[in-house]
Amino acid sequence: MPVSVANSKIVYDALKASGVRVMSALPETWLVHLIRMAEEDPEMRLIRLAKEEEGVGISAGAHMAGVKSAMLMQNHGFLAAINGIVSFAQLYKIPLLMLISHRGSFGERDPWQTEGGRVTESVLRALHIPYEKLKQPESAARRIAWAQHLAESSLHPTALLLMRELMWEDA
Amino acid sequence: MKRIECLRAIYGRLESCVVVTIMGAVAAELQSLGHRPNFFYLQHAMGLASSTGLGLALCVPKKKVVVLDGDGSLLMNLGTLSTLARYRPANLIEVVFDNESLLSVGGFPTATSTGTDLAGIARASGVSRAWQMNDVETFRKTFDDCMKANELSMIVAKVEATGPAKFVTDLGLLENRFEFSRCVRSYRGE
Image (cartoon, rainbow over all chains, first blue to last red; front, side):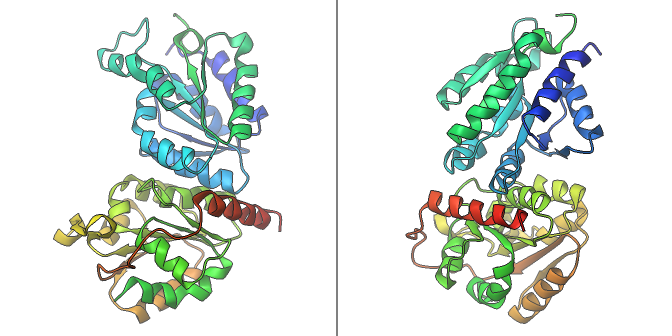
């Protein structure tokens, strides 16, 4: 599977360095290595979800207890979590650090990913969620740290879109 | 049995717990008995009270976390039962007030009114300690057993579809959230 182990490691290490100790996740091809790294790390609490919206509640509970967390999901999972994001995280000023694999963009071969790929960014903008696209491994760690800082200082969700260039080796 | 009677029966026990409620009648009735800094009322995001309880339970393992949920909310996120069963936080008690109704939006019947058994769904999801009950004394005794047990537990309390005249209280959402957060963080420092 040509998902980049090296770049997954860069992303994982940056989350860890940002103080993240709880991660919620739903499996998706591009996230397999990240989820495995979380599972194998005794300092990380990985919660495998049935649906992404649960992760909003878990992150909110962790935040109110003073523990930093991150949510790993596909963009369709982000779309499935929106009521939780709006009527919990945004209503109650809860920081969420969301790492969203951006399926359905240029290069996508799976027809079922394409509609989500088309609308993800406009939905993020409609929700006023600051986001950046992660493409280059060189700047990924710094951008993850910055997204985490902004989430904490603004008490608001921030998002990083994990792009094909970063996650897929034969892109 | 009435929800307020159940709340009154366990109110004293909640002082030492981290408590998360759903919106509507549960939040308003618990506040009517007396707000405390360790109570968080999730006034929207139906279905996520138990997920919030899971996040809290994992991060504050020395405290009992009590979720006061409802049938309408839980039915919106039944997957949460499989997630709770997977991680089995020993310090989490999930109480579901099942009035078979979406009371705060006009009393429309939920699927528990036509036979859906939430305690049965919980057991089949892997929450082996899950019971349904109809009287306050059994509720109080079961709750006390759960407080002593070091195991994930769920209590479905069948209650009447009655509630307070109004649901909005004078406690601001953010005031509650920040006070609660400060309180829970102080427990981690203990």
